Length: 263
Image (cartoon, rainbow, N blue to C red; front, side):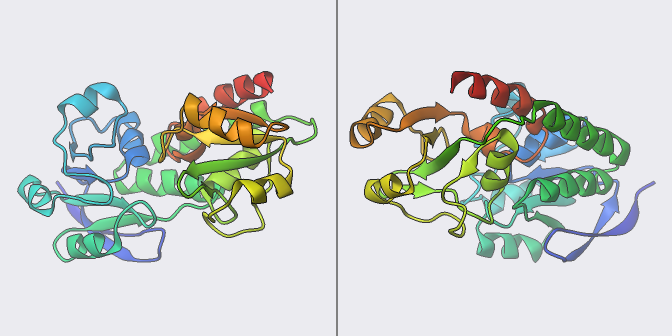
């Protein structure tokens, strides 16, 4: 029989839910995948149009809009007893509106340790504590196995174009870059600074990594940058491996090993 339980999210807010929650909506793609990997297929009743993993659930689960533009009426119609959101990925005013009507648990992730904490807290929140702890143990082991003692290659990681924007300090991407064996030349700048090709040149990175999301960099963008930076190696990379902070991290170790083999 469900009982009311109180939990603290990653921004320090307490929420009370009917435990275990049976009608969960996730408006964070990487956390949607995490919920399914924790075995909550039937309990997840709504996702966003960007929650593309797992593919079969993306095709069949009701959509509640995007991460920045959610459909409040659709969410109300699904009558959730828990909504899982993220401080950075979701729009603050929309989340506040949801909080007026439903329990909303908010994640806030800037480092690998934040991600590990989130997984365990979400596991406890949805009555999958042991599964979540096992997942964290597996991810930590994967990163340990993929660690390298070689000198770290320097890089810049671009997430946007027109203007170019890079991942700086105080971001999960920066933390993942270090775990993947890179030295981020933008690490002394906060968050996601705008950057010019001239500035990139002055920082002298060995590599510039072009992410597949949120901006979908392609071969033509790689060639465009390569013409402006002939001495730097430009690589297209899978943005999910660098920015999804849920169970997708299990796949990151093999991806990073393959990436280093390309260098």
